[in-house]
Image (cartoon, rainbow over all chains, first blue to last red; front, side):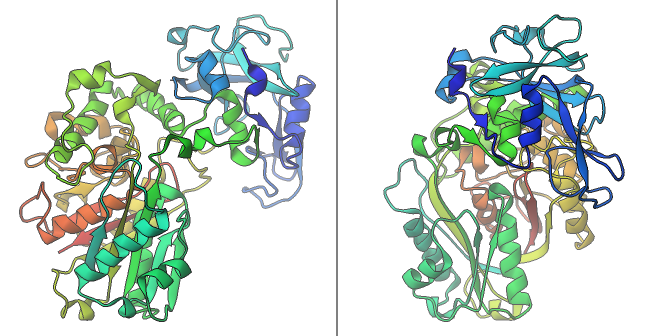
Length: 154
Length: 376
């Protein structure tokens, strides 16, 4: 599987760089307002709750719930077509259910993208984050809460 | 008032440039309105338009242009363009405005997922790396959840696709005029992004369409039966994110809800008074979501609304996309829906709803959007 040909974030994007740097350390960090405590994602300069410019990258539990999922089929970019059909899930974070991260349900951090049978996936399943090394980036992916998997967050 | 409409033919792989297509459609609309190019002094267009205002003015031979504006967000812009043109003539910023959309997207190399670079900046970085690549994937995510929460089924989505195809089969200008679609064909079609199949997607089309808008008093002297822009609204709802609108309280409450609030507030007609609608249909599930947002039924009831031929000409509860829409006539960012709304009000649609006093036209659900209520 040519995972290095996946589309990857630009680690030089100043707004989001701390997110990807945390992923490389095995941590899911989400931007949070230091004035009012509101989580916000995607990251941005100002808190829409209190208009503060002061934010931090707070450690999240890494736990969430599958809100929905899709199974893409070609035509897709070549690297993705190779592993299609695969699943893409949308995970509601435990910290704030209005933050829903796009990801993939995998058997473990090192598992292939198409290892899980899409027919087995259900909305409402509890998942926790793992980090998969793809090229020069660590992408957050998700395993079933009761499943094993390297680099999982406590 | 809309007093002129014009369009090019719809096809895959037209040779003309987008600018040329735009000029052809605008020129036809000016002729239909019975105006001279020199009388057009207002321009309203999609910000995604390739041909710019100055080029259009130079090609079509316009006089001094005193108003020009752009509306963003692709499929959400169509009714916004019409609304901006109407506001401009109503406030006297210009005396006659054209609004248009020209689009060449039928070539496979023009699809966005064939063009992206490997490094993703902006909001795409939160979805593209995980293989959520195309608009259809982004809307399929909402669709699965919608099915889960409200019991919508593929049969409901097929109701949408089949109704629009039937209308296209009656429309000589529709891309799918000669291609019928059965429920079996729908059910057996290949997946694009489960739970959406091929026939849940709009077409990819080359073509252009334009409208001419003038103040009511000017319309009296012109040849076509005038069509009023009775009400107009745009909306960017709270904490909205374009297409991947996953970071708000409820992603199934789309921009149409916020747009509908102002649209109906400014109209004597209410949803129950609307006999025909043109609803933005880049993907079939946007239709039930919009039916809910624009108040034709309650939240979660949009799928069931499509049952018993409700969207079909001539006797459905709300005949919708009577030219075939984006899924079966042409996909030109929804601007063909505006022209079909005008034809319904003129009484010249190929699937005419007899005696229709008004017609709702909506633009993209899932993006910053807009809508107009047209009336005779």
